[in-house]
Amino acid sequence: MKILCLTLTIVFCLICSTGLLAQTTQTKSNQSNVPQVPTTQTKSSQSNALIPPATSSKISQIDLMKIWIGTWKAEMGKDIISTMECKSIYNAFEFHSTIETKGKVIVDWKNLVGYDKSSDRMIESEVMNNNSEMTLYSFWFSSPTKCQKIILGDDDNPDKVKIVYTYEFKSPDNFISTEIRNNKTINSYSFQKVK
Image (cartoon, rainbow, N blue to C red; front, top):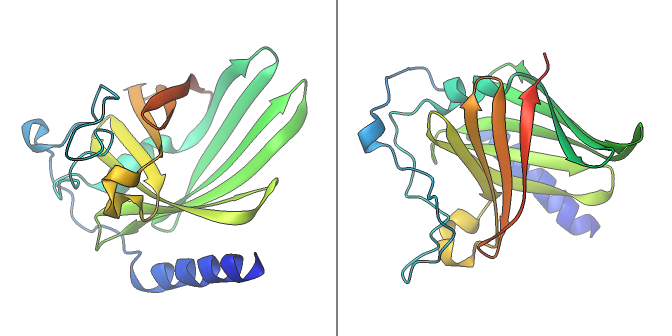
């Protein structure tokens, strides 16, 4: 377990030191050339239908990430609230999220998200209060209002992807978060920007 955590930490540090670069140019995206997040959860015979083709270099991942900045809340059930705060740090983004019930925090986690030029995607590291291991994700916008993330490495083999998180911004102050496991929607929550 310690070796795995150390290995993930070293890999993350290598990514940070060699691959996380901010995009320096901003171009207008052409909606017709942008791969769209699939609306169905049916599996294609050739590849996982949940994973779109590689992102278009015309989409500025850094600029689109700025929509996350602020504090967001969602009701996840009776007396269960999820809160997520995003801040811009340098050319990256820091998230702090909690799930609480009746005023008591039951899950607490932090994420650091930065741009990886070689994949034209964001790389996200996640650490949680109830899990000793760090998780790394590949995170990208496929259009100005849709993004998704999968466990880092799964994008190399789309047929093996088991978990996909999709996010669709309905407005600058509202997005829908959906968790899909084995091509089945597990849950979906509406987040509102509160500040």
